Length: 201
Image (tube, rainbow, N blue to C red; front, side, top):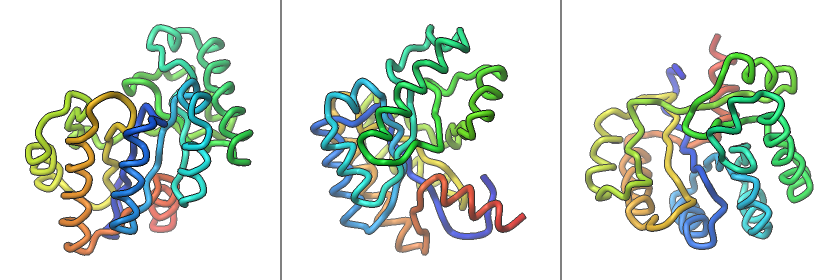
């Protein structure tokens, strides 16, 4: 997403998680950065207090489906039911319906994208060059080195707060926030990034 302003959007998938999410929130708070969390509905249902905490700390919550099932998304009506279940759940917990949806794995059909557009839900992926596949837990210095080398204004970075062994992810986020902030970057939510781009057009 092109913009002339030094801003980047960090996103976190597959939470909320009782270990990963609080650790991510702590490092974001340390650097006074905002982020977007694409939450899985079944995880949000298990950890409602974490959903509320993310919201109350000023971060954005996006929809990552209820079951995070790849096969489910081959059928638009089933996919929409899965997505709407998560919409309703997050609304009950925060009072706000997510405006953004990230398909599991980034896979989405044109038909589903159109169905979501009719519901005023924006499909969001990420800057493909910046996928370090942190869910595999590569060393933080490798992840951070890649991100810092390719960093550009308007990028959407993808990380995961859900899943096991998030230690390297937390270290990576800390390194990147410190370095990029020193270079003048600000970290905003995806919706803020979209709005900024719209204002520049």
